[in-house]
Image (cartoon, rainbow, N blue to C red; front, side, top):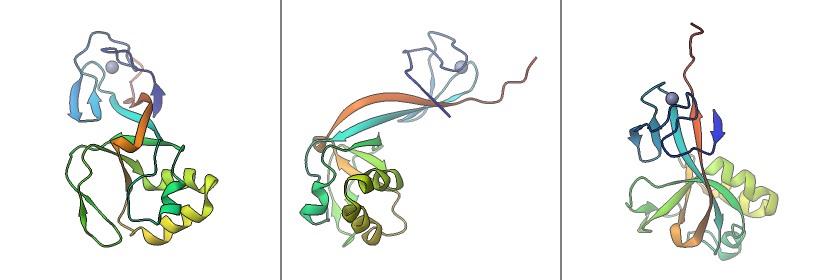
Length: 150
Ligand SMILES: [Zn+2]
């Protein structure tokens, strides 16, 4: 896996230009020339105390942190993991829980610990509302197939 600033229509692996990539899902495309898979990723910065079931002091710890994220594929409701209620958040971003807690740990071990203890084991992502974050950068990670040397 490599990171790159992808020029529109250029494959980061084979550098073919003016391609129309095959869309696999909302974040993932495939190069029609070489078959490499490109995943569009984001870094976001939390700009305000996010909504959620954690106590305010715990949620405040997220503010100003930079997190790796992806846009949610749907605008469906989110589940409040403390009571299983459905919460409608609109447009939002998913942050892998493991990365989020590693980053949070450096600022507030107490807040990270709260999530470790409270989040159910099936949870893979935390959700942040689009109005709670700003996009810092967008980049592309690609995974190239093995090219035979002939
Ligand atoms: Zn390519």
